[in-house]
Image (cartoon, one colour):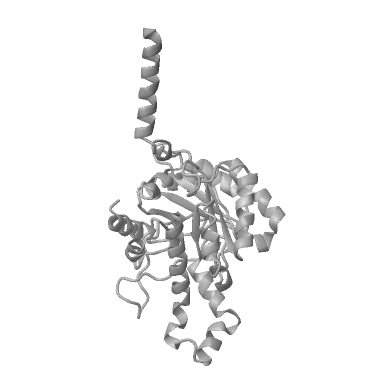
Length: 323
């Protein structure tokens, strides 16, 4: 009888402890370290992975060009694989090793949108994992669904997660239908995606909306809440607004102040940020030493630097974020 009473008492104590700490499971430490920083409400800082022959992120920024605002840095060099970059970028393990030794870098952003190369991603990942003291997350941007097609994109998502990357970035999604495809690819790859619906997940699924029609569906995409990051390429969005003479036509018809023509990408970016915040997920944006502090104040939780001067920009961003 005494044994039974004692057993009941122990069981009651276990239940009481569990009820007193309902959030313990949701607060587990993640292997993907940037997730733990996000759960603290802090931004993370990353750099584009340079290909062989490209300038490094930790080199000093070049002096500002004449006529620019004081303290403003010139635009970054083309990211590897982007339009205007040198052809056939080549990646090595040494690049990953060098990034793993930089304590300021939270994540490495590998741009394979222009030229998909899984072997390059594997080489960089091996280098990043060479340093057990500092874990840098690797996010890989792949060609869009409209460029590569759903079947090829599905295979690439699984291939990258099988290699061990921390996240896959999907650019130029045309709206909710593409976003649903992205989510299905990650599910089919059995990736444990971190999201508002799965706070214990480890992998990152990033959806980019980069044209005006897609941005109009930002609320519906964000409401899915089963992916990790909602973002846009601010340059790509600006180009989409200018494409086909949209800005010129709106200006000519008196529907748009000419002075606001170059601000439409900022307006679209702000809309995406608001939807990401509402849905409880991060928004990523490129930044430099001239605007990183402002972007931190605005609430972007992932800031991406490119090329020389990135180290200085990250230092400014970390100070602004209290990190």
